[in-house]
Length: 126
Image 1 (cartoon, rainbow, N blue to C red):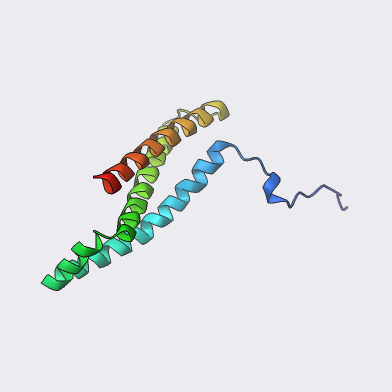
Image 2 (cartoon, rainbow, N blue to C red):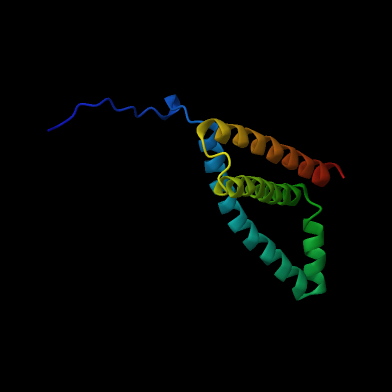
């Protein structure tokens, strides 16, 4: 028996709830953290090999590209931490229904945005 069901393959028409977006971004930030650990371990190893390596890494942190990389890594850490705390609260049994899940997702996204903006101010302005 073959059922003729409509198939929607136009991804631009999908309407996902905010909980889906924060969950997907939580996974993306975890992958970004995985790669940022490799970057920072390489920089640490370079800075510890010699005096020239230490000077080179110090000069690298003064460049705008490296400041952006540090901001991106710290932003991924902040986002992942806030959303991880949200998941821990949900694991305790709070905010598991649809309405409260959407509310906690909006609150966590606002807190993460505030942290990311403050990290940007700390890196780029100070």
